[in-house]
Amino acid sequence: MLQEILLTNRKLGIMENNNSYGIVTGPDNIYTDVSRTLKGAKRYATIHSFDKVGIRYNSGYVCKVVSIKVNNKWKDQ
Image (cartoon, rainbow, N blue to C red; front, top):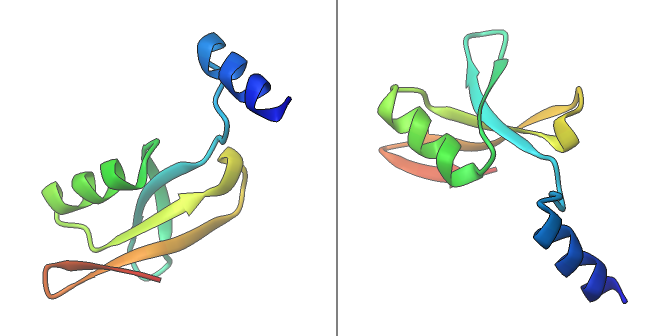
């Protein structure tokens, strides 16, 4: 039953989760959305010289740093 619902949602284009990923900047840890995937946010951060990536759960108000770049490698938190 659950699998049928998930397949129907995919066919209709309904997202299973609504998380947003973004960069975290400055001493105040200001979060800015940049991608729908963690990989995309890490790519954006690397290209634009940022070193922290965060997640915003279900596009709500709660944000958390999920990855930091140390010695040119991404370390998950």
